[in-house]
Length: 310
Ligand SMILES: C[S@@+](CC[C@H](N)C(=O)[O-])C[C@H]1O[C@@H](n2cnc3c(N)ncnc32)[C@H](O)[C@@H]1O
Image 1 (tube, rainbow, N blue to C red):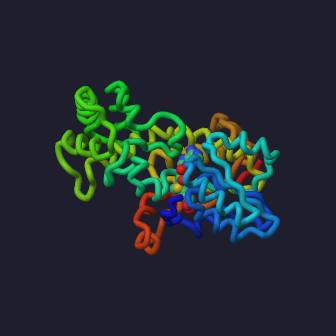
Image 2: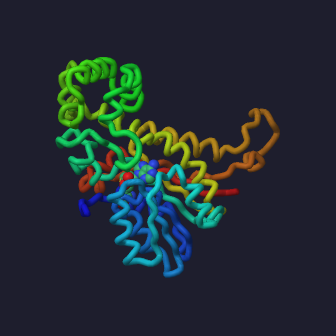
Image 3: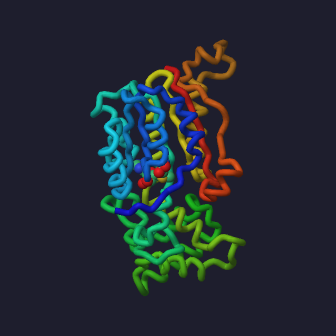
């Protein structure tokens, strides 16, 4: 089992935002290496409960270890887009006091060459958070239409040379299958007309392909409504995102739910009569200087919090 570490991002901020009730029932939808889970457990009494979810088998092994040490904790391997099912199986509908989603990849996923997430290490071009499900990045790139590759690079990576890179991928794969991270990184480097300062030319494409392979935006979109449905009145949903596309999904969803019914603006009703389902708690939170010094990966993290009203 790997014991590589992941420094939890916005740890105190996330736990404070959950406003933990010591005897409450909580879900950490992205267990990872359990940094946030351990802090939640520390705030719970002996009667509190925490369920961890993750789709990565390595994360699950760490969670199983924690479950043996702490009877208040259980772990389940699943995608968080199946949250409703997880809740229904436990008869927890409307009873959960807080849910945390710290989305994206963990440091161990990025830092293990054999997971194929990083252009910095040579490994098989995989990128699946659950390597037992779905197609790997190599499998997808072997058959995808050039226009689909271009779409993914442009929309999920904001890669302005998406067309050139997509063409280079298709031309290369006709000669040799693209099966390793180094092969892909080198190909992208050659296809990019110039380098941005302090940024490898493959950064954006790797991020884009990873987001696509793991359906990260779809997972988030599906999970948000399910998370709200499972919360008790007064329960909190805390989401930490790492990418502007993710944060936009979270921000819009929260704004719409907090606004309530969509009536024409001239209707003579007060804000409460629009039946908002949540209230926004504070503004978006970002990592401070101190955290960034010890964990530069926290740079793009944004935390948002809401509380269920009805
Ligand atoms: C940023 S890490 C979380 C780190 C964790 N908070 C900690 O302190 O160790 C994100 C984790 O969420 C998992 N993950 C990402 N998307 C997921 C999804 N849709 N369903 C379940 N787990 C997911 C990843 O496998 C990864 O382990």
